[in-house]
Image 1 (cartoon, rainbow, N blue to C red):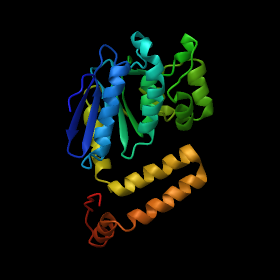
Image 2: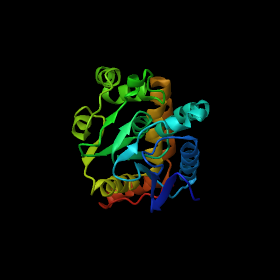
Image 3: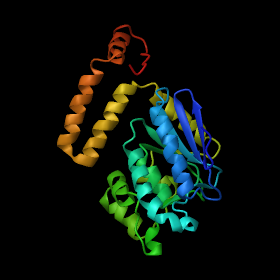
Image 4: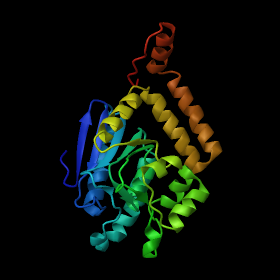
Amino acid sequence: MAYDNLILEKRGHIAIITLSHPPVNAWNLGLMEDFEKAIEEIENDKDVRVLIITGAGEKCFSAGFDVSDAANSHITSPKGRHLWTRIDRFSKPVIAAINGFAMGGGLELALSCHFRIMVDDPKATVGLTELNLGIIPGWGGTQRLTRIVGKAKALDMILFSKRLDAKEALTIGLINQISTKDTLMNDAVAFAEILAQRPPLAVCAVLNAISAFDYSGLEAGLKVEEEGSAIVGQSKDCVEGFTAFLEKREPVFTGK
């Protein structure tokens, strides 16, 4: 399927969404609708095991909400919350390849991803700067930033509208890895290729169990973990894993 505001590429078991809404990949209704269709396509594609999200160009991952589309804010505001939650609870690992600055809703999207790799460049900063406009992060930023970096650091970033570079973001645990402009996508794909070699059913079970805890608490998380353990324990991948271990070779998982 062709999209007007993003590029969807598939490389083996890896899908790459490149946000392409110049000049700063800001989120208007058109981009959100394309994004929703793209992640639906990826989720239903059994061959795709990992998703990478990045921005077009070297300047910007995403600047967040498109103020020029304010007339549609009654649609885009709840849709943004819904889509970011969908990424947060996605059944396949999602990597944010942060190629430039990520502000407001752009960072909130990255926070919804399971992993974040960021380019080390003076112009590439991340922040939830909504308080400068007299508003607050509205697409999950107050919750997900706190979950990732802790309450004290989240309050410091949000209340003072701080912008962090890659080294600062790595220090507080906001990102997983630093890269360069020239190697960002290669690093993200290499990271994704390792994830894609992991057993897909087990990966999905882990994501679902952790998500259940995040959204519904410990008892729910333990229940989903138990259910997932029963399913993967009867899978062909489980047989392959134990067989490969006994035969002293690398397993080849098929997701069955």
